Amino acid sequence: MNSQPLVSVVIPTYNRGHLIKDSIESVFNQTYKNIELIIVDDASTDNTKEIVTSIKNDRLVYIRMEDNRGPSAARNKGIKTAKGEIVAFLDSDDRWYPEKTEEQVKLLINSGKPVGAVFCGMEFYDYKTKEKTGEHIITVDIKKNFLKGKHFLTPPMVTVLAYKKVLEEVGGLDETLKANEDTELAIKICKNYEFALLNKVLVKVTRNHEQLMANDKNYIKAREIIFYKHYDFLSKDILFGLAKQIANYSILHSDISKAKKFTIEALKLRPLNIKTIGQLALLAISPGLTKKIFSEKHSGTVKLSGLKT
Image 1 (cartoon, rainbow, N blue to C red):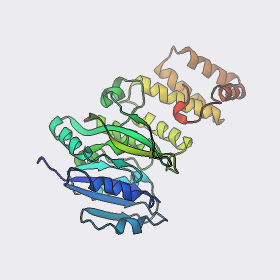
Image 2 (cartoon, one colour):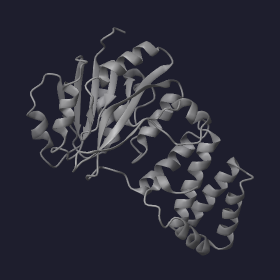
Image 3 (cartoon, rainbow, N blue to C red):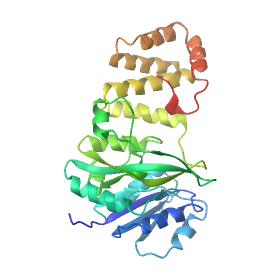
Image 4 (cartoon, one colour):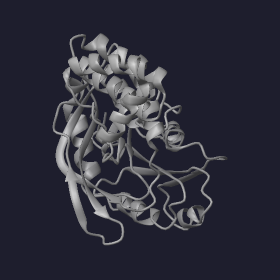
């Protein structure tokens, strides 16, 4: 591979006409110039098409989907269209620091095998105030964590840059998932490759506006699919956490059959876990009381990620 390979940047978008221009500018302002930008419009109903096509740049490719199929399908369309040896991802309401592509390409090329993708840190900005609200860098070894760790961690898509051949080899993103599709992609990549970390904050993520976030039901369904699809790869601790999360969510939503099923799955992974044994017994004796106890226990839980196991 040459030292300046073409990088295809894929931006999926839906009704982000009022935000996407800044994202596009952040790509064309990269210090790394061998870039093509692929905008995949997921059948927007606003002025996204007009905004994007008004930008005259021969490195810009605009694709419009015939119907709304979600960000995974849009990203897969971008990957398929990409002419570059390397693919990077950005969301239509976020921005990159100018040096992101240059530094990540250098890291990817110099890492050699078995590194198939790289990622970096990100910082968060409030949409209304424009003020920075925090930052996040995953410093653990992504593959090692999937194999032996305890936490369901993944590099956010907007921080990832990967070889196109790697993305194609693993089949791209699973379009049946309405949440956690980035995690599932990372798991597939880690089965044959590794992620390298560029330990710098190079992405600005916009928050606190009408983002296209999946609801809790979609997250639980995605975790259920991932649980079975990658059961033989993920660590027992991660699988246990997923099983308990699905079981607890099912209790709260009166799906007692599924709650029992995944409590049993959790016990297969940790047969001597007292709390889980007690949970299964309580489900068998009094499902109604179980739901009441769990409802009180999780009354302050706002996000699915905070659901206790």
